Amino acid sequence: MFFKNIREDIRNIVEKDPAARNGVEVLLCYPGIWALIFHKPAHFLYKHKLKLLARMTSQFARFLTGIEIHPGAQIGRRCFIDHGMGIVIGETTEIGDDCTIYQGVTLGGTGKESGKRHPTLGNRVMVSSGAKVLGPFTVGDDSKIGSGSVVLKEVPPGSTVVGIPGTIVKTREKFKDQEMDQVNMPDPIAVELECLRRRVIALEDELARMEGKPLPVQYICSDEDEGCACSVLEEDR
Image (cartoon, rainbow, N blue to C red; front, side, top):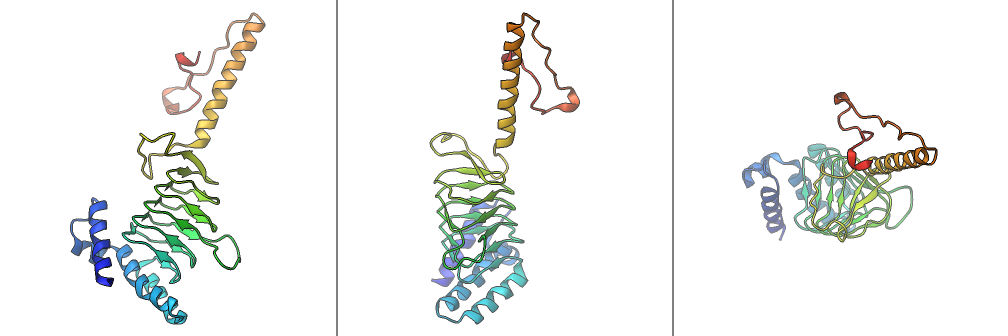
C-alpha cells in the first residue's frame, strides 16, 4: 500500500505539472513528493504513540525539503505539493483527496486551544502561494484560496476566496462557467472602489442637473495611468 500510494502521487504530479517530464524526475527533484514519503511513516509512528520518533522523522523531512508537516496531520490521496518551500501543516489538519498546495502556505491554528485547532480541507481544494488558513473550520470541496490570502472562517464548497481577511469572491452557483487559477482572481477591494466611483459620478451628475449646471467634467486617465479605475467611459455617463 505504501509504494502504491507513492506511485499514485508521482503519477498525479506528472499529470498536473507541465514542468514534470517523467516519474523519475519527480522522484529525484520534487521536494513535495519526499515530504509526503516521510510523512507516511511519521504519521504511522504518531498513531502508535511513538510521538518522539514521529517528530524526529518529520523534522528530518523538514530539514531536507523545507516543508514542515506535523506527523499528526491527516493527508488524503494524490496531494500535490508544488515547490513547497515554507509550507507549514499543523497537527490536527485534515486534507482531502486531490488537493494542491503551493509554496509558503500555512495550515495553522490561531492560539493555544486544545483539540481540533487546525483547518480541514475538502477534496480538490487549491491553496495558492503564501496563503494562510488559520483555525478549526472547513474549506469546502472544489474551493480555491488566492495567493497571500488570510482565511479565518469557513468556506462553502465551490468558492474562491481572496484578500485579508479572506473574502468570498466566487461561488459555484454564481460563476459556474468561469475558470480561475491562483493568478486569475478578482480583487474585491478594486471592485468596491469601482462601485463607489460610479456612485459618486451618478450623484455629481444628479446634483448638477438639479442646480441647472453643466455636467461636471470627469477625470480621464492618461496613458501613464493605464489600468486606473478612475477613468470614465461613455457608458458610465
